[in-house]
Amino acid sequence: MNKRNFIRGILYAALTLLALICLIPFAMMIINSTRSNTEIVRGFTLIPGKSLIENYKNMMYHMDVSDGVFKGIWLGYKNSFIIAISVTILSGYFSALTAYGFYAYDFKGKKVLFILILIMMMIPSQLGLLGFYELNKALKTLDSYIPLIVPSIATPFTVFFMRQYLVSTMHPALLEAARIDGANEFSIFHKIVLPIMLPAIATMSIFTFIGAWNNYLIPLTIIVSPHKYPLPVLMGYLKGGKVSENLGSMYLAISMSVAPIIIAFMFLSKYIISSISAGSVKE
Image (cartoon, rainbow, N blue to C red; front, side, top):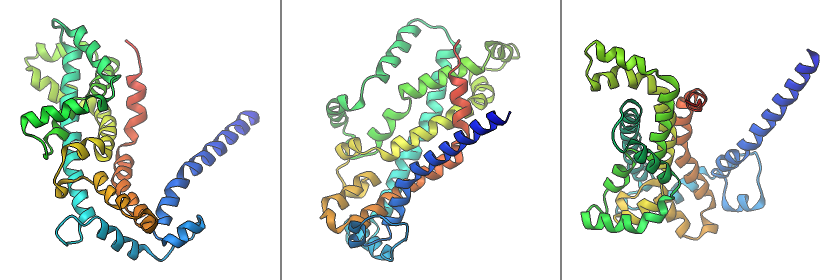
Protein backbone atom coordinates (compact mmCIF):
# COMPACT_ATOMS: atom_id res chain seq x y z
CA MET A 1 0.00 0.00 0.00
CA ASN A 2 2.84 2.39 0.84
CA LYS A 3 4.51 1.55 -2.44
CA ARG A 4 1.31 2.33 -4.31
CA ASN A 5 0.97 5.70 -2.55
CA PHE A 6 4.62 6.47 -3.29
CA ILE A 7 4.15 5.75 -7.01
CA ARG A 8 0.94 7.78 -7.03
CA GLY A 9 2.72 10.68 -5.36
CA ILE A 10 5.49 10.58 -7.99
CA LEU A 11 2.91 10.57 -10.79
CA TYR A 12 1.02 13.49 -9.27
CA ALA A 13 4.26 15.44 -8.85
CA ALA A 14 5.27 14.72 -12.46
CA LEU A 15 1.85 15.76 -13.77
CA THR A 16 1.90 18.93 -11.67
CA LEU A 17 5.35 19.79 -13.05
CA LEU A 18 4.16 19.10 -16.59
CA ALA A 19 1.11 21.35 -16.07
CA LEU A 20 3.32 24.16 -14.80
CA ILE A 21 5.60 23.79 -17.82
CA CYS A 22 2.56 24.01 -20.12
CA LEU A 23 1.46 27.21 -18.35
CA ILE A 24 4.83 28.94 -18.84
CA PRO A 25 4.04 30.18 -22.40
CA PHE A 26 0.75 31.68 -21.17
CA ALA A 27 2.53 33.37 -18.27
CA MET A 28 5.17 34.77 -20.64
CA MET A 29 2.46 36.05 -22.98
CA ILE A 30 0.50 37.84 -20.24
CA ILE A 31 3.55 39.30 -18.47
CA ASN A 32 5.19 40.45 -21.72
CA SER A 33 1.98 42.27 -22.65
CA THR A 34 2.70 44.64 -19.75
CA ARG A 35 6.36 45.25 -20.67
CA SER A 36 8.06 47.57 -23.13
CA ASN A 37 10.05 46.39 -26.16
CA THR A 38 13.35 47.08 -24.40
CA GLU A 39 12.32 45.00 -21.39
CA ILE A 40 11.11 42.14 -23.57
CA VAL A 41 14.38 42.03 -25.52
CA ARG A 42 16.36 41.80 -22.29
CA GLY A 43 14.73 38.50 -21.40
CA PHE A 44 11.79 37.01 -19.54
CA THR A 45 10.97 37.78 -15.93
CA LEU A 46 8.02 37.03 -13.66
CA ILE A 47 7.72 40.70 -12.67
CA PRO A 48 5.06 42.55 -14.73
CA GLY A 49 6.05 45.79 -16.44
CA LYS A 50 4.40 49.21 -16.47
CA SER A 51 3.76 49.60 -20.20
CA LEU A 52 0.33 48.01 -20.44
CA ILE A 53 -1.50 51.24 -21.33
CA GLU A 54 1.17 52.25 -23.82
CA ASN A 55 1.02 48.82 -25.46
CA TYR A 56 -2.77 49.05 -25.62
CA LYS A 57 -2.67 52.46 -27.32
CA ASN A 58 -0.04 51.25 -29.78
CA MET A 59 -2.10 48.14 -30.54
CA MET A 60 -5.24 50.19 -31.16
CA TYR A 61 -3.31 52.54 -33.43
CA HIS A 62 -2.06 49.73 -35.67
CA MET A 63 -5.46 48.03 -35.70
CA ASP A 64 -7.37 51.20 -36.57
CA VAL A 65 -9.71 50.30 -39.44
CA SER A 66 -12.62 52.55 -38.46
CA ASP A 67 -11.84 55.93 -40.01
CA GLY A 68 -9.75 57.27 -37.18
CA VAL A 69 -11.81 55.82 -34.32
CA PHE A 70 -9.56 53.58 -32.22
CA LYS A 71 -11.71 50.46 -31.89
CA GLY A 72 -10.04 48.06 -34.27
CA ILE A 73 -9.62 45.14 -31.91
CA TRP A 74 -13.16 45.52 -30.55
CA LEU A 75 -14.48 45.56 -34.09
CA GLY A 76 -12.49 42.38 -34.68
CA TYR A 77 -13.96 40.91 -31.50
CA LYS A 78 -17.49 41.62 -32.74
CA ASN A 79 -16.82 40.12 -36.17
CA SER A 80 -15.16 37.03 -34.70
CA PHE A 81 -18.01 36.50 -32.23
CA ILE A 82 -20.59 36.77 -35.02
CA ILE A 83 -18.77 34.12 -37.05
CA ALA A 84 -17.73 31.79 -34.22
CA ILE A 85 -21.06 31.76 -32.36
CA SER A 86 -23.07 31.30 -35.58
CA VAL A 87 -20.84 28.42 -36.68
CA THR A 88 -20.91 26.79 -33.23
CA ILE A 89 -24.70 26.90 -32.85
CA LEU A 90 -25.51 25.81 -36.40
CA SER A 91 -22.83 23.12 -36.45
CA GLY A 92 -23.96 21.68 -33.11
CA TYR A 93 -27.60 21.39 -34.20
CA PHE A 94 -27.29 20.27 -37.81
CA SER A 95 -24.36 17.93 -37.15
CA ALA A 96 -26.43 16.25 -34.42
CA LEU A 97 -29.37 16.00 -36.82
CA THR A 98 -27.16 14.50 -39.54
CA ALA A 99 -25.57 12.06 -37.10
CA TYR A 100 -29.03 10.99 -35.93
CA GLY A 101 -30.02 10.33 -39.53
CA PHE A 102 -27.01 8.06 -40.04
CA TYR A 103 -27.71 6.27 -36.77
CA ALA A 104 -31.48 5.79 -36.85
CA TYR A 105 -32.35 5.22 -40.52
CA ASP A 106 -31.43 2.71 -43.19
CA PHE A 107 -31.48 4.18 -46.67
CA LYS A 108 -29.91 3.48 -50.02
CA GLY A 109 -26.32 4.68 -50.23
CA LYS A 110 -25.95 5.10 -46.47
CA LYS A 111 -22.63 3.22 -46.28
CA VAL A 112 -21.27 5.04 -49.33
CA LEU A 113 -22.13 8.44 -47.85
CA PHE A 114 -20.55 7.51 -44.54
CA ILE A 115 -17.38 6.37 -46.32
CA LEU A 116 -17.33 9.71 -48.16
CA ILE A 117 -17.52 11.48 -44.80
CA LEU A 118 -14.51 9.48 -43.59
CA ILE A 119 -12.60 10.34 -46.76
CA MET A 120 -13.44 14.05 -46.43
CA MET A 121 -12.01 13.98 -42.90
CA MET A 122 -8.62 13.10 -44.39
CA ILE A 123 -8.55 15.88 -47.01
CA PRO A 124 -7.14 19.25 -45.86
CA SER A 125 -9.56 22.09 -46.50
CA GLN A 126 -6.73 24.24 -47.89
CA LEU A 127 -6.58 22.04 -51.00
CA GLY A 128 -9.98 23.29 -52.13
CA LEU A 129 -9.38 26.93 -51.30
CA LEU A 130 -9.01 28.06 -54.93
CA GLY A 131 -12.16 26.26 -56.03
CA PHE A 132 -13.96 27.56 -52.94
CA TYR A 133 -13.01 31.11 -53.87
CA GLU A 134 -14.20 30.68 -57.46
CA LEU A 135 -17.48 29.15 -56.28
CA ASN A 136 -18.20 32.09 -53.99
CA LYS A 137 -17.20 34.48 -56.73
CA ALA A 138 -19.79 32.88 -59.01
CA LEU A 139 -22.41 32.97 -56.24
CA LYS A 140 -21.50 36.60 -55.45
CA THR A 141 -20.96 35.81 -51.77
CA LEU A 142 -17.43 37.21 -51.54
CA ASP A 143 -16.80 39.81 -48.83
CA SER A 144 -19.55 38.33 -46.65
CA TYR A 145 -19.76 35.93 -43.72
CA ILE A 146 -21.85 33.39 -45.64
CA PRO A 147 -18.80 31.39 -46.92
CA LEU A 148 -17.41 31.33 -43.38
CA ILE A 149 -20.62 30.08 -41.74
CA VAL A 150 -22.63 27.92 -44.16
CA PRO A 151 -19.93 25.34 -45.09
CA SER A 152 -19.26 24.72 -41.39
CA ILE A 153 -22.84 23.73 -40.57
CA ALA A 154 -22.17 19.96 -40.75
CA THR A 155 -18.46 19.20 -40.78
CA PRO A 156 -17.39 15.56 -41.40
CA PHE A 157 -15.52 15.02 -38.14
CA THR A 158 -18.33 16.47 -36.01
CA VAL A 159 -20.91 14.25 -37.73
CA PHE A 160 -18.66 11.20 -37.35
CA PHE A 161 -18.01 11.88 -33.66
CA MET A 162 -21.68 12.42 -32.83
CA ARG A 163 -22.75 9.34 -34.74
CA GLN A 164 -20.24 7.23 -32.80
CA TYR A 165 -21.48 8.80 -29.58
CA LEU A 166 -25.05 7.77 -30.38
CA VAL A 167 -23.91 4.24 -31.18
CA SER A 168 -22.27 3.94 -27.77
CA THR A 169 -24.90 5.65 -25.59
CA MET A 170 -28.40 5.22 -27.05
CA HIS A 171 -30.23 1.92 -27.58
CA PRO A 172 -32.49 1.66 -30.65
CA ALA A 173 -35.29 0.30 -28.43
CA LEU A 174 -35.66 3.80 -26.97
CA LEU A 175 -36.54 5.18 -30.40
CA GLU A 176 -38.92 2.31 -31.12
CA ALA A 177 -40.74 2.91 -27.83
CA ALA A 178 -41.17 6.60 -28.70
CA ARG A 179 -42.55 5.71 -32.15
CA ILE A 180 -45.00 3.22 -30.64
CA ASP A 181 -46.23 5.98 -28.31
CA GLY A 182 -47.00 8.09 -31.38
CA ALA A 183 -44.15 10.60 -31.32
CA ASN A 184 -43.09 12.00 -34.69
CA GLU A 185 -39.47 11.98 -35.80
CA PHE A 186 -38.72 15.61 -34.99
CA SER A 187 -40.24 15.24 -31.53
CA ILE A 188 -38.09 12.16 -30.94
CA PHE A 189 -34.99 14.07 -31.99
CA HIS A 190 -35.68 17.19 -29.95
CA LYS A 191 -37.09 15.59 -26.79
CA ILE A 192 -35.10 12.33 -26.57
CA VAL A 193 -32.03 12.30 -28.81
CA LEU A 194 -30.85 15.89 -28.39
CA PRO A 195 -30.73 15.79 -24.55
CA ILE A 196 -28.76 12.53 -24.72
CA MET A 197 -26.30 14.10 -27.16
CA LEU A 198 -25.68 17.26 -25.12
CA PRO A 199 -22.25 16.08 -23.79
CA ALA A 200 -21.08 15.30 -27.33
CA ILE A 201 -22.49 18.59 -28.65
CA ALA A 202 -20.75 20.52 -25.86
CA THR A 203 -17.45 18.78 -26.59
CA MET A 204 -17.63 19.45 -30.31
CA SER A 205 -18.76 23.02 -29.64
CA ILE A 206 -15.45 23.72 -27.90
CA PHE A 207 -13.42 22.58 -30.91
CA THR A 208 -15.80 24.21 -33.37
CA PHE A 209 -15.65 27.54 -31.54
CA ILE A 210 -11.85 27.41 -31.32
CA GLY A 211 -11.54 26.52 -35.01
CA ALA A 212 -13.91 29.29 -36.10
CA TRP A 213 -12.29 31.83 -33.77
CA ASN A 214 -8.76 31.04 -34.98
CA ASN A 215 -9.67 30.74 -38.65
CA TYR A 216 -7.26 32.94 -40.59
CA LEU A 217 -6.65 31.74 -44.15
CA ILE A 218 -10.24 31.56 -45.41
CA PRO A 219 -11.35 34.98 -44.02
CA LEU A 220 -8.16 36.50 -45.42
CA THR A 221 -9.09 35.10 -48.85
CA ILE A 222 -12.83 35.80 -48.80
CA ILE A 223 -13.17 39.07 -46.85
CA VAL A 224 -12.06 42.25 -48.62
CA SER A 225 -13.54 45.07 -46.51
CA PRO A 226 -11.32 45.86 -43.48
CA HIS A 227 -14.30 46.61 -41.22
CA LYS A 228 -15.44 42.98 -41.70
CA TYR A 229 -12.11 41.41 -40.72
CA PRO A 230 -12.23 38.94 -37.82
CA LEU A 231 -9.67 39.19 -35.05
CA PRO A 232 -7.01 36.81 -36.48
CA VAL A 233 -6.85 38.83 -39.71
CA LEU A 234 -6.64 42.10 -37.78
CA MET A 235 -3.62 40.66 -35.97
CA GLY A 236 -1.80 41.04 -39.28
CA TYR A 237 -1.96 44.80 -38.87
CA LEU A 238 0.48 44.50 -35.99
CA LYS A 239 2.70 42.06 -37.85
CA GLY A 240 2.63 44.27 -40.90
CA GLY A 241 4.34 47.12 -39.07
CA LYS A 242 7.80 47.13 -37.60
CA VAL A 243 7.79 44.04 -35.42
CA SER A 244 10.60 45.33 -33.22
CA GLU A 245 8.40 48.28 -32.24
CA ASN A 246 5.24 46.25 -31.54
CA LEU A 247 6.37 43.32 -29.39
CA GLY A 248 4.43 44.37 -26.30
CA SER A 249 1.40 45.24 -28.41
CA MET A 250 1.53 41.88 -30.15
CA TYR A 251 1.67 40.03 -26.82
CA LEU A 252 -1.28 42.09 -25.57
CA ALA A 253 -3.34 41.44 -28.71
CA ILE A 254 -2.62 37.71 -28.54
CA SER A 255 -3.56 37.64 -24.85
CA MET A 256 -6.87 39.34 -25.60
CA SER A 257 -7.57 37.06 -28.55
CA VAL A 258 -7.16 33.82 -26.58
CA ALA A 259 -9.27 34.99 -23.63
CA PRO A 260 -12.65 33.89 -25.12
CA ILE A 261 -11.19 30.47 -25.96
CA ILE A 262 -9.98 29.96 -22.39
CA ILE A 263 -13.36 31.05 -21.00
CA ALA A 264 -15.26 28.70 -23.33
CA PHE A 265 -12.96 25.83 -22.40
CA MET A 266 -13.41 26.49 -18.68
CA PHE A 267 -17.20 26.26 -18.93
CA LEU A 268 -17.42 23.26 -21.28
CA SER A 269 -14.30 21.21 -20.53
CA LYS A 270 -16.11 18.93 -18.05
CA TYR A 271 -17.90 17.27 -20.98
CA ILE A 272 -14.74 16.36 -22.89
CA ILE A 273 -13.56 13.28 -20.97
CA SER A 274 -17.03 11.79 -20.51
CA SER A 275 -18.12 12.22 -24.12
CA ILE A 276 -14.83 11.15 -25.68
CA SER A 277 -14.64 8.02 -23.50
CA ALA A 278 -18.25 7.20 -24.37
CA GLY A 279 -17.73 7.85 -28.05
CA SER A 280 -14.73 5.57 -28.17
CA VAL A 281 -16.75 2.44 -27.33
CA LYS A 282 -17.13 0.20 -30.34
CA GLU A 283 -20.36 -1.32 -31.56
